[in-house]
Figure 1 (cartoon, rainbow, N blue to C red):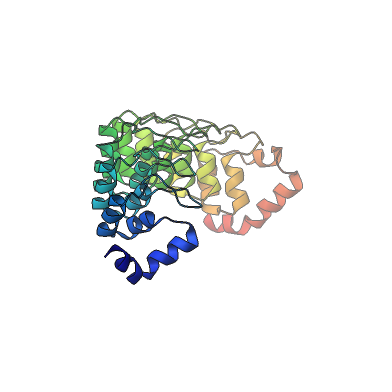
Figure 2 (cartoon, rainbow, N blue to C red; figure 1 turned 90 degrees about the vertical axis):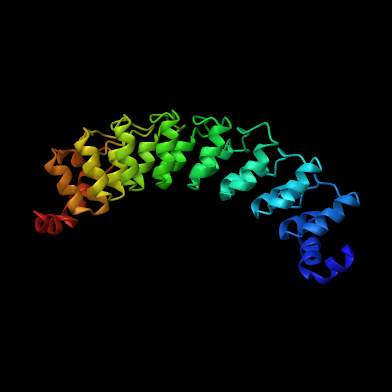
Length: 307
């Protein structure tokens, strides 16, 4: 019966041949419960990984939300913490794709909620990165470290702030995530939120005492990032909260320099009205005076219209 079922499903044999996947892997991927059970009863190994990504059947069942198959594989003593070629476990997959039911099943069997991938990301990193608030809550209840850092120093709060997931940001901070944590480049969650114009996240981080004048390893503050990417609302909030309008990065650039260079006349006016010193552009070590004059000349008319 099992062989007839496999023969009728051309996808099963096709994928098996082309991608070095075992029959158990393919059956788990496509949610064929009876085939999975028959294969296991006939001695199929749960720990054999596919060719390229080195995923086991449990990985792919978790990814595609085949909850019953996850349960079956788990009961057959499939390794819950088995890693793919990137160091990700089935728990990473459930967190990444926001599969709460799968996550709950795996958490009941896995002892390592803080397992890290090859780049140091935990399931909480992945859930926060994709805005899965319910998954975030479940992981934290099970002991997930809210301040764990990846190999480049990124925390779940960095990920959530970067992508603008305000509810995740709020919950992480409520659970004592460090708002001023820095990655290996000296960037805080506020740097990320400012860079991408995540206005609500910016406001909340500042409310929770994020440092508005913190400088990265290249000397950039959140205000530099907001000005460089044209996020006027973020610039307004940062200035109201005490951001230094004339602070220079390691190249001598101020936020005004970036606003001028990128051609944001309204933003440049906002900075000038807040006390930005236009002479810093000419003194910048990063560009010659001639180039600076050329940049300024390019926005003279827009600035005049703004004024």
